[in-house]
Image 1 (tube, rainbow, N blue to C red):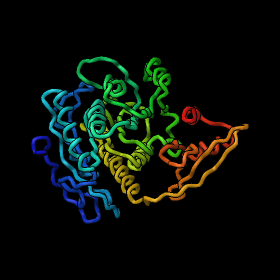
Image 2: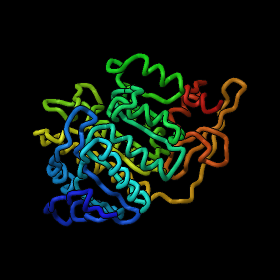
Image 3: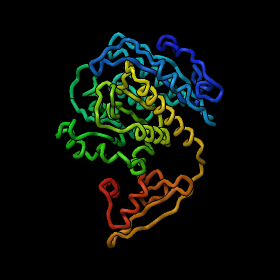
Image 4: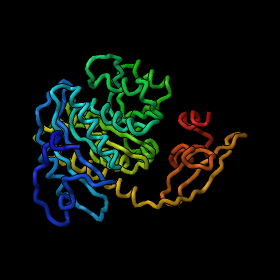
Length: 359
């Protein structure tokens, strides 16, 4: 693929030897990470004019390189198409190219309907995906017009060539959503988690990310102060520490294929906003590096809990201390859960997610 027709190279940024920027390349390395910055915000009612991500890059490149071994490439700024459809087509081509080289592409910027292209590119090569979205809203418009922020999720979940395995929607806020949309998600047994249940509870949320193939994060789910962090800023949302912690959890996924961080406000004059996005990316990279350093051979301890006359089984990974629910010998057939789920089971309580899996 001729990337020159799709991307404007990232600017040169001077960094010191101990900083991440010294290791960031401008070319893809097989098995690495590729950062792709996008400007097309037409799906959220904005424009597709080129946005300036230089400040985000400066903040990211200046962070510590640690002892990471994974290769990180900054492919530059993606060139928006003349139409929304053109943008989606070209972006899917670029992402597919990355995926075929076992590179995890991270799309940064643009409106959140670009999640559709991220999902479709992965779905082209892999089926039965686990998709996690962090977003304060659940839009399920079932319209066939140009794809936008209110109908992309419906398309992902209903199109026949998208045999989705699991969908988890995290961080929704009840006061911003239609009651019918929330109820529909519950009726079809998708996991939806309120913002209140994510705050201060990263350990309990970790199982949703553990086997994710695709994760997209809508920056509207992050709280804004003094100046907008996102395209549709909200005073309520994940705070700065929480969103960095969850960014790390995304990187820790064992099956991760691609990530999107959308609805960031690149026109923000606040240094803190650019700094926060940079640190979100950094924590994601840290998670990937930790995950890839884990041993391939795994050992598990099994715990049996009696609830009435019924036996339930939990397994604990002795290296990572991660928990699973189920009695199958193959761990991939068990459900990721938390130690809190195990402790609750000892008190005689199984949550709906575990009960549904058991059935």
